[in-house]
Image 1 (cartoon, rainbow, N blue to C red):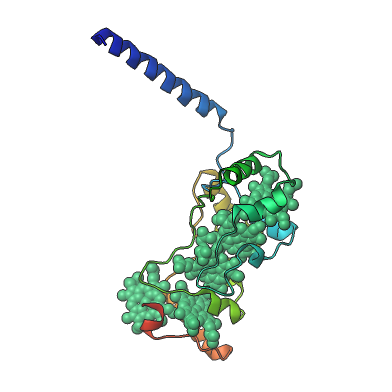
Image 2: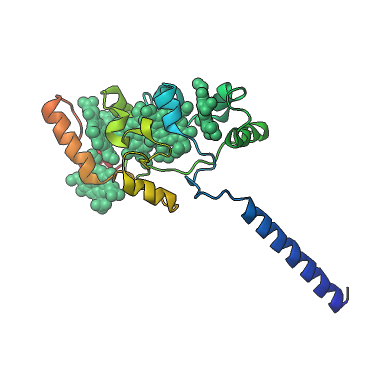
Length: 195
Ligand code: HEC
Ligand code: HEC
Ligand code: HEC
Ligand code: HEC
Ligand code: HEC
């Protein structure tokens, strides 16, 4: 190919890129994206309005270290029919059709050198909300839209409100309190949480 040919091709490619850029930009809705999740999953609708149990979706919490996230198939159990015409549900169906898991962004995460088992806590009857806040009111986990103005503003500006800190002091304080008030045997030795 001649130099001019390569140059012309470059110009065409650039034009295509600009066109794609502008057209996808103009498709953006006029409001700030309410979450950085691939699908805007509203806990408040599912748990608050429709009273679906936390453990229907986070089914491993009672029996394993992890709480777990529901499979696409579990969502589609309802959404093959419910709200099937909405954009987020169409996205959901596409993940299902491709057989791909939804790449959810993790919210709560401890450093690798710590050990946290859900099982022990859930079986002892510590409520999910005690550690995760009033999830049933949240449009996005950890962003308490509604109750506080600051979180709403953060959210509108495209930031996530900070989840409760998962510091070592937070774990140990509760263990002390539960041992004193509920006759629990929550560990205070280093090796229980670091191994
Ligand atoms: C037990 C039934 C059920 C299950 C399971 C379920 N949903 Fe829903 N979902 C609903 C109902 C009911 C609504 C409210 C629909 C309406 O507004 O009419 C809803 C609403 C939604 C919406 C809001 C739709 C919109 O734009 O208004 C999204 C997004 C959504 N669900 C995603 C999911 C995902 C992702 C899962 C799996 C993790 C899931 N749902 C599992 C019943 C369910
Ligand atoms: C219909 C299914 C469904 C129900 C019911 C449900 N969740 Fe979820 N939950 C999800 C999905 C999907 C995600 C991942 C997307 C997100 O973070 O919003 C999630 C995320 C979370 C997270 C953040 C996980 C992380 O990344 O660290 C917490 C905490 C959580 N849920 C707690 C709860 C609690 C507590 C309840 C009951 C009050 C509950 N969930 C009920 C589907 C559900
Ligand atoms: C004692 C505090 C505590 C309680 C009670 C608790 N969690 Fe968690 N949860 C955590 C911590 C800490 C993490 C981060 C764990 C990690 O990174 O290893 C977490 C992570 C999660 C996650 C994301 C990772 C995963 O495990 O799949 C989900 C979902 C979740 N919790 C849901 C729940 C639900 C639902 C309940 C109630 C049935 C619950 N949690 C009860 C402290 C708690
Ligand atoms: C809201 C109170 C509370 C918080 C916060 C909490 N725990 Fe616990 N923890 C408990 C209780 C209650 C038990 C169970 C005691 C029992 O079974 O007697 C427990 C038990 C444990 C156990 C022992 C599990 C077993 O199999 O014996 C570990 C490990 C643990 N917690 C780690 C953590 C870590 C790490 C954190 C912080 C990220 C944390 N916990 C935060 C209340 C809490
Ligand atoms: C009940 C659970 C628990 C117990 C008991 C515990 N830790 Fe931790 N530790 C944690 C968690 C959770 C973190 C991560 C905190 C963070 O990332 O902010 C942590 C963090 C640390 C760190 C990293 C520095 C820091 O502060 O983030 C060190 C060092 C540490 N722990 C040492 C110890 C020693 C030594 C003991 C015993 C005297 C101990 N831990 C007992 C849960 C525990």
